[in-house]
Image (cartoon, rainbow, N blue to C red; front, side):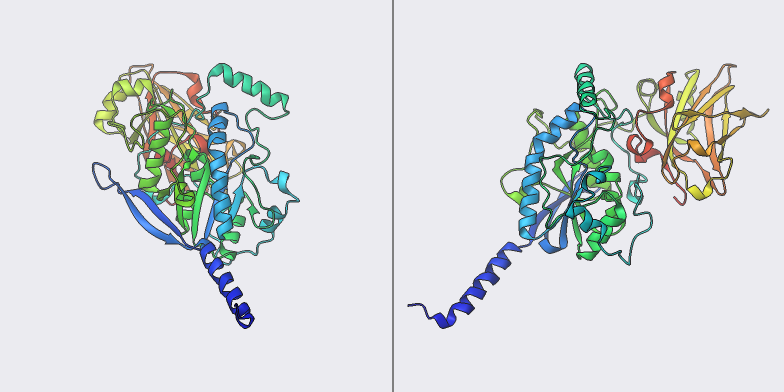
Length: 469
């Protein structure tokens, strides 16, 4: 017969045991790569993360997207992603929903108000509100794909039909998202909603979060670069991992290195593991097996690198953009001089405090009779002196202030000169030598003067210049 005198003790003991079971630590296997090892080797490290010190950030899992194939892939893994969040939430972890550009849809939502009203952290990092295009570890990395076309891998006819459907729904086909996907549940009593880097940081600090799991889309753009993304969290000393089977990349197989979509995504994951942060998989939270896309029928998966990714020759220069260093080596100079027209492009972050009333001055040292240049698709008015040096003012209205800017230069040898771009310099209230890695190609196509999306999405950390770096 049960002694009622001990009921309170037994009751409290059961609560304590239940609570301890609920708050069991996450046992994770963090996968990463050491770029110093050749051939590349993946390693795993077992870590135990306290659930109450861990947050899950859901990046840009929008209700609609301009790519129908991107929508299909997201809808395929979103149910599993939602299960991950349910499990993490039930164990006591923090969930932050970050559907960028969609905060108006949640202006009265308790989860949004909770984020807005989080107390300001005393250690708010500099530039936490900004997109992050590169961290120091990536400065010598070789980015493995070309995403400058936007990464859409849709069938052209399907894409047209999808754009018409979006128009019929009253959506902008280029930016159709207005909210987070309905496949992802938001607990208005516990979760947070924010797409702002400072707000997300405030939440993490208020809740004592040391560890962050990033999931959502797209790895090579928003997941890496957003103010709440992988690069910012790594730069500011959070323990962060990418859940690699709960994400996707924007990569078009018609672009370099001309592999299938899933291999292109693998190469992005490999870049993350080598230069940004470790990765984990959903089964480490849910049990069972990691998620796999149904259309990924490759025999070899988890591709780490491809042979000759860095190789530059005359054939590759005519087929796609290649990464070179300026001033160029004699070998590269010889290759570039094989064609009458050369194109160069890079990405530059221009601080607002550098910009004068006239803008900033671009100086080019080159040997060519015809020089044209564009910033973010806007053509610049170039003046050339008798020695062949060029300069122009970049209109302040053309500049994405404190953000990434796409600079494209075309030079033409119409007088038999050995044409090439030697050096570039940006001068405002301060100056920046654009000496280092650029992308270049041979041939002539007016469309090369711009890319179909903002520079911060389409360019790679290979060719990124910023003050102080």
